[in-house]
Length: 319
Image (cartoon, rainbow, N blue to C red; front, top):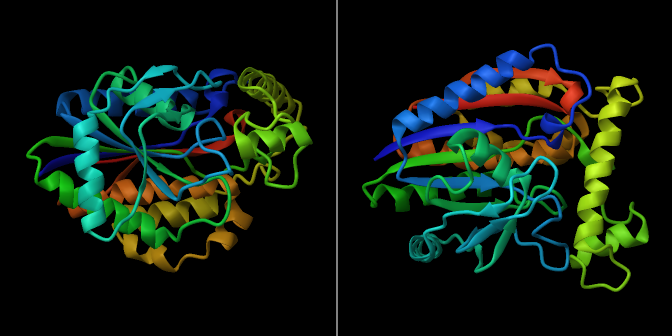
């Protein structure tokens, strides 16, 4: 099997920062270089692992894993709206195979994704519909979380299926690294009534924001947040940007010692590196898939703490 791996951070503030980060050009170069390498690899299938920010998945029914048979990207800030090119029959075959392997993902015939998928797909592929993509959602926003071990096993199971296809496969992961976007996406019990009603119901509750109100709220708050960062009203510590925690993760990743994540204390990681660190589930799943497919160990293309865009930004790849 011929596979390639790409893991990249995402952030709405990539598109509304108020002060350019010091190493902005280096980050853009890393993203462009990987996009060009992916184009040269010419994947016939992309398996995209990502999360959601209460745009497609809500607390009334929050799966740990979900495979999309059709997917539409919402136009949230930092995202790219439109339809993903999902090969539905192949996605259904994947789910059937995963269940034979004792994995039990949920399925969606009408999946809605946000910037957690669309931003990295756009940056790496040129558009969200440029390649056949099977999106695999992982709950990274609200507890209880699945153990990192389960995401690793999911990735390995996906690779077993892909190995029988005879295709060039890109395993893509979007999210991370350390950051804490609870200002925008509050924990259950910490938001005003209309916001919490949206996060639970997705607009079904009469007390809820409408979809348009939710998207306008995110647009306004991210622009406001970018200004607050420049004024020093939101500090790296408040955003849980933590290079030590990130490098601990990256060093384990580049040594391909993915099994070590099985024992990591997720609550301790959140305390160090914020709720956004749970998006590293996607990296573990994608890296496990690539390793199982016989791919080389991951390499770090870029890493830096970048408070201006609200995240510690990482780009990792492997041939």
